[in-house]
Image 1 (cartoon, rainbow, N blue to C red):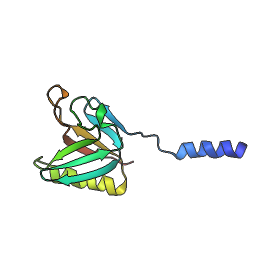
Image 2: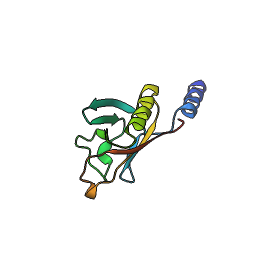
Image 3: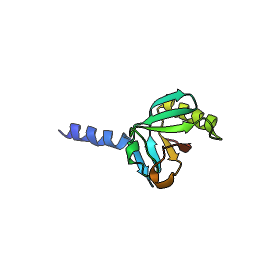
Length: 116
């Protein structure tokens, strides 16, 4: 029994304490992993393991996706960062553009890739 308890304690020490969260400040998804990247004409849809429906400064129509506009000044750099996070299964922070009354679609303003 002591070995089992010790093993559980040891495992809990090495497990990650970060958890995916969307809605911080109404406009940010923190410590999320990317589940899907879908590139279409003019924009890229991004789905994370967070709950995008919790974002209050913008609207995710299905509660699962945020958008990256290809006309964004840093779209190529943000896309490269997203691909790095996706392929490396790394956590990323996504900041959405504020919209009037939280009624506009959720567009990525910037992305941060931090050491996990």
